[in-house]
Length: 375
Image 1 (cartoon, rainbow, N blue to C red):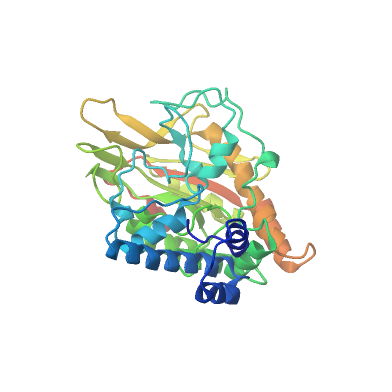
Image 2: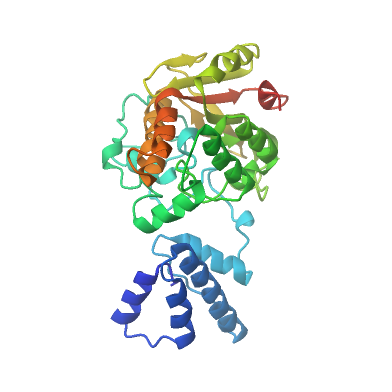
């Protein structure tokens, strides 16, 4: 069982009456107020112990994750017994522990907040399988009963870590843009719109374009590159099992200032392969999609199976997601600062006036999504 937190380590070792080596106690005492440092030490110590066990000839390792798999995976990677890029994925979503029998399709909007999606849909009588059905029928859970809503600001320690990443003070929107740029560069690993740390590995194909897009003031919170018939066993993009081929349409979702929206829409309207939805916090909508449209943006072709379409863009679900996305500016990021501070005003202004835009290039072979932005 990896060391996850100082408090948890003390409780467990006290309860079990464990004789802890002084070197371990001393190392933890020095970093006990830094959660990330404690986790990193837990991975380091766990890897050292596992190497010693394997060198001594033990037949295997048993890891207790307690549904917190990141440290366990980190240990196995460090030891060299696991290459996460080669772990087959049944579906292309970012995986978190769940029991959803038969579920095989989700809206793309929650790609970086899978726990939020699981919670907001846990009361559904059944989960979409094969095709995305009528999303007006099941009701999404409200934001108020969502325990993961404030992932990065639910404790003082988490607030300190988030403030270190997002800035002790924000003077203007340029400071906000800089946070997104640093996230794309990998200089920080957390954003309010992402439960899991760091960019998804598949964004490596478009990382430079995402960096330029954010620097230009289009603040991306979700994206994927286009793919055209990659083997389903591809170590980076594959899913669904051997013998198939996977496809994707280029997708990008971002916040932008109101003065950027109209010029952008004029460019988007010139490309017949582009579909888009733009909405602000007040619920004003600009879109070239019909309300009842469901657009598959990821699909796979496999031997002896129907074509699978696990990720979709659904305008009805987007209207639900936009409430969550806009709320995070204030409830997650804004809560780090004093109520009357300039930092909080900057974020509140963005939440109140900017637009959330979802763009799909439906030409997955010769699409020109990023050329719309001059990239």
